[in-house]
Amino acid sequence: RGVWVWRHQLRAWEEEMLGECQTLLLSISLQDHIQDRWQWRPDPDIGYTVRGAYQLLTAQDTVTLDAAAGLIWHPRVPLKVSIFAWRLLRDRLPTRA
Image (cartoon, rainbow, N blue to C red; front, side):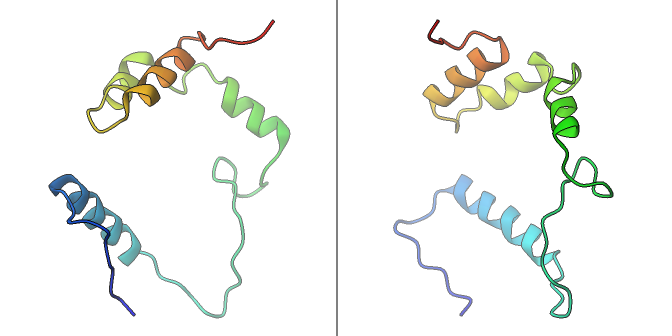
């Protein structure tokens, strides 16, 4: 218990990501007497609704292209994922008629 075995030696950026993940996990306090449950973050009081999901997906201020560019074209993101995201945000995904 508590031992991680990796297939290869972690690269510096992987170690950095692992450290961030461990920090996040250590900040979580699990409680045995409370049952796990799903929670819709946009509206935790009401929960998930189709209307709420639609509003979230169609909101105009969700992501600006300039703000997303740093994430889309990040060197660690595979090129095909970057191209897909770029096309998605510009509404240029190929579709069948």
